[in-house]
Length: 425
Image (cartoon, rainbow, N blue to C red; front, side):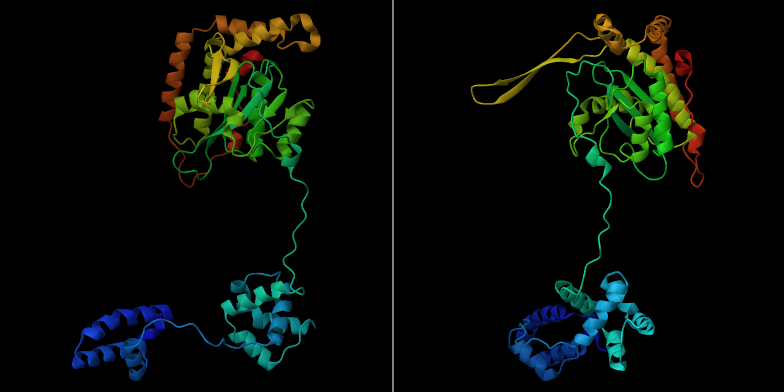
């Protein structure tokens, strides 16, 4: 067997160009030995090698194109077989040409001859691909039919950004924080995070996985704990939020809830929740992997304490005014001014006090709920609460991760129980 079988034509000419340098510098006996070597490598005739070495070892363009090896009867058979197999690719189609042709003959869809079967048996994959491309340009060859699906759910949900000066509580930006660590494989924890634009109120709940049952349980947990109703849900374009099941859940929860979404690849459309993801989730948990039922329960216990600490005790700044200034050099500068720092609960009470005289339909928070939150705030030692938060963080990271091969049961985290939730209900 000659060694040229492992060389393409371009590789052979590259070999000739390398050998020509040695051939021109060699004497007559050395040239003979080089010709012997090239003859053994390429299996070409000795006189052909001499002509190449004395000429230009470059591949010349073909002066006359080769004729077609397969006639129209092969094209007709390929058209019928490709249609029968739903226009699969040439790599999948070629090995099935002969058996499928014989099968179609039985059903009267094709007529074959021994010559046609022989041609279908020896035709190569690249040749089938070329024939199919040519047939695709003809009218008889039709591409695979497209399935006409129903209009996407996304088309019915408007894209927008909640205004930064939204004054009415209940307009929530929503996001999902991944706790997968360095490898996003398998089932792991997520933090469902809701942030109200007007007050800065934050709701967080840990979920094992992002199935509908987990997401639904997380929203139910947040809705039951919120001291004011949800008026708008504004997530990104993730399918964990924008699906028929969850949209139906919100419609059942409250038909008046408005659902909007951020624009694709515009993270600033969810700027408030993205900022709180960094300060209220990543700042405490980092990027470690969490993936067990025990860690889910421990993280929810931590979030219960953080819920009180942030919403009732941590003052936050809100953007009060934003002006755009143009300098003499035509540079553009935005000046932002912030109001006095207040806790989310203080902002909620201030808005409620402003709306007291407007009628019962504008009530922001019920008096009983407000009184319970005030009692919870007054009876809580914020310093001890902060110490408890960091103790809970140490306890969380002391728990072992998931054992390879052992499946964690997401239903063990549903329903999510909360001591604070019990106090409020």
